[in-house]
Image 1: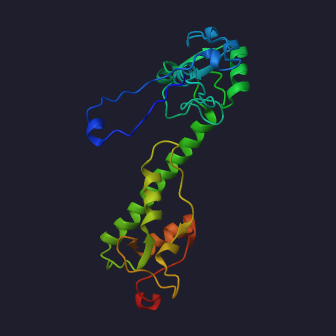
Image 2 (image 1 turned 135 degrees about the vertical axis):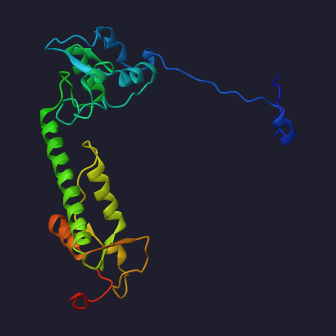
Length: 240
């Protein structure tokens, strides 16, 4: 004889008296087909410098250990060329990676993908040279703008700033010149299009959208980055 079970929705007062709980599940390696074939035991101390060694982030290995799908192999300290980013110290990176045998690396790459591979604990020469060039450019642009503005003050020239520059682009430029790593690249061409209305093509009188510049500063930016369009608060002939 079948017994019928009657279920009803609890009232709000009953729900307030019930203590909630959360269950956590952890999938074992057996639940990941073929994962047990990866010899994680082949991980050796990071001090190993054998030619056949590959370095993997401890963070990713932790994901591999506790998650059914850790995602592609990654290492936040490695550049696209397979070297250590120049903004990272080798001593710091050496404590956050472990070296694995070539066979283990190839098997993990085949299964999860990712990369690039870190073969040695050395700073990338390509990125180091690029960073040096970027920092030299940053310093030059900061110095040039400072000298242009200082010259106007020392010569007693009346301060006239009729040119408009979108704040969004200016913020990108400021982020670039104040950065010391490869994380921020130079901004693209100047884009003042957001200051234009769709109908009449006139700029928006909104001080939160633009910054006023002198002719000298505007000319410097345009010569270096190009772009536009050129927007002014008064006709060009009135400046003569």
